[in-house]
Figure 1 (cartoon, rainbow, N blue to C red):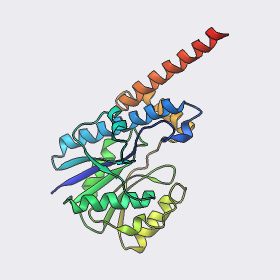
Figure 2: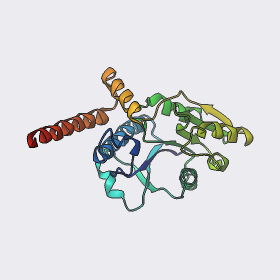
Figure 3: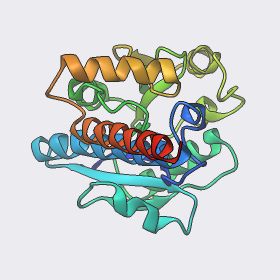
Figure 4: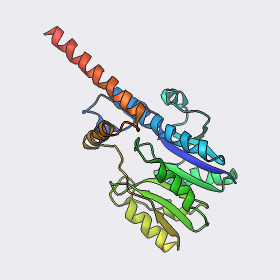
Length: 237
């Protein structure tokens, strides 16, 4: 039995990722922060892989040709798989299809927006997948999801979904119900897409020292750069 744990990610390039944070931070700082999010997610994935011998780690990335951008992401031993498709639904569908065709018996896909995601949520995803008609989903507070897993490709879950809207989770639940699937929901967690969510993340990192080490370090570097920029502005006055 082979299992795949996948991180769906964009290349951490300035102006291409986490654009709602630009303004609160520079585009360059946002790209570095997103790379740190990916590094923390991979750290979680690697911990799980150490405990689960059948688990293979996969980076499913976009765009093709931007592989060098991922050199700033701390990761080891992961398969790289290019995303295919024009919409998120198409890219997710192709990701699952490619891995099932490669012989994996269960596939769990994560987003890169939750650097403090509890490992037990991901572990529970694999533990709950036992039948072809089961789908595991991790609901996000913004009404999307941070995780989806299955033992067999169920295309309806990725078709005619209003991606990037507050209706993603509701539409996915409806699709699962119509298809006769057993939808298993994990605990809710939050994505970091907005300045308010970034403030929440910073508060969590203050309260918990056992998570987000790459993100924590990156935020300190960003704060130092902002301080340096402010000093240079003062010097020119």
